[in-house]
Length: 249
Ligand code: SAM
Image (tube, rainbow, N blue to C red; front, side, top):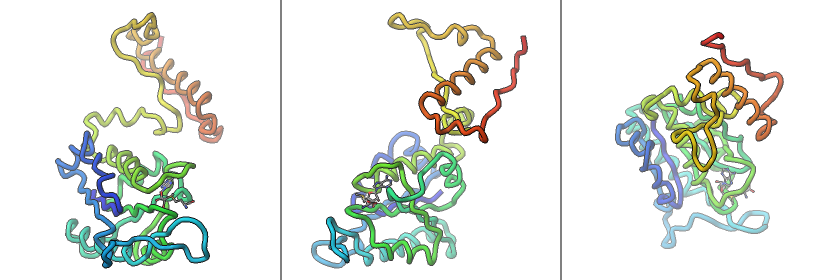
């Protein structure tokens, strides 16, 4: 997968060199390029913002550097992918965007090429999104119902959630299947050694070796945890049946 990120703070994306995502880049499972928006300005101060038309507080990101930066992303990505007609799927982080979910992470993991436009200040001049949408698929995307200072933190989260779904990035692909949000329920509590710690014991059933009983206990825990922490997820029309008992009796 190719990913291009445009930001005025390229250093913000440096954590994407670490851990599993860093390894995925070394193994060429993920080709990630970060572009400095200020490289596409032409004035001495490398200006990217200006006052809003119509008045009001704050500054708005000017369209010219964004237009040039996204043109560059298109050219660089086409060369990297060796696909002269390809276009990126542009995601524009915004608190007014579509909420990002695990289902969306799966959809994005099937895309060959993603690009991200990280806004700052009061956001990016709307014509940048309109211009991009006249050529590419574009989706404003929100990390959640709160306001960040810029799109970079959203990109870190989205790229990590998407890249770990790419084949080969997470060593044990089975570990992806049972996770929270994969089927609408949260994950069950997990434990490791020692069996007793500070007077707290691991639930007996997990030490029983009885796979059927463990599967049932985990399902009950998932339902209880979801009901208490995220009742909004327990939509009756999306109710999930318990796993089959592999070890009857
Ligand atoms: N004035 C904008 C509004 O009220 O919708 C908020 C601008 S915010 C201070 C600056 C930038 O941070 C946005 O352009 C966007 O890139 C990013 N951002 C802020 N909150 C976000 C969120 N919840 N999800 C994704 N990106 C966010």
